[in-house]
Image (cartoon, rainbow, N blue to C red; front, side, top):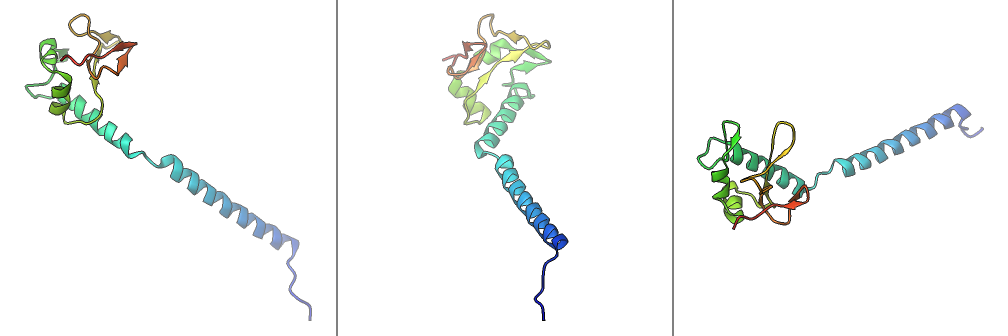
Length: 129
């Protein structure tokens, strides 16, 4: 009695199955690495949303009223008060742009209120201490 022999067509399809399985394993590993989000990124995103909400809300502390920046209100805060009022832990710099994307300076000379290590157009934000 002869032993079972694998025909050439069967060997090719077995190799193809192995290659496809390896491909999907590699794809799954790559997807897991690429799609894995840094937990810090989520915190920064949440803090950014909180900051936008704070700046433009109906709160009495909001800086934007009727689509215009109230410079008096924004200058009332120093950096520590600003972070505490917003409720964030990330570094913050609040700056404004007009509808054309041009930087709107606060009080005619300040690019932004926040952490002095953050720069906007090579100019540091000020902590407004």
